[in-house]
Image (cartoon, rainbow, N blue to C red; front, side):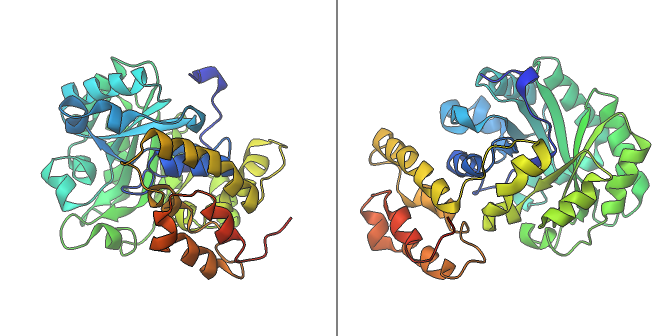
Length: 332
């Protein structure tokens, strides 16, 4: 298990994304970048307190540094879940205070928790009391028509009093009624300056920005003001954007893998996973995360078509990755 002393900084991270950032996706991303922090999909406390812990918490050792994002609002259940997360080897526990979906709201957690900062503080304290690893919070800058900077400032101040030292700021409001989760990632305007102000007002804490960030130039700009940048959909739809992360942001001079080398590295992993979970795991469950690897290259459409061909996928042969790569000319 990786210890805190060996962990890289959170300068770059990939957001927790429901139905996307599962352990297979994280393994794929780890083949592109060695140091970027990876986050699980949100796991509810109910799934851990009453469900199949192994199914929800197992991950690949090479995923480190990897954080477990929890969804919940009961301090006791969150403490139990955080303790399990540490026992399973996660490097960080993150509390979801940013998801706006109605399903999550019915569970009284996610973005609606921003209306109850003292409850969030109680949850953070309960988790910090039982784990040695970092407990962080991912949140929005406001909810519904709460547009004032004071709202998020007071939220951060209250939660910080409970010992939280790292805040991941999705720099949009969450609209709890009337917008879908997808619309909530696009319609509310981005206000990066709110995150910048938080860092200026609370310089002793770590602030990581999330929301609408796509390019290295944008990352460079944000890092002039903040401690870290979290990529979301761009890391999924255009994962090779992360290929420069280790050298550019972590000073690692290890040669950057080509796209083809990334594919080749995934083949033994896929073979092992299919053998281990024979009859339960399908090839597409892993390859679906890789469709964007050739984004912006000539022939990328053919690559995606091959990896989406149901007849070819039914063969269960991971060498399909190389067949897909042959549909375009890859750089040496």
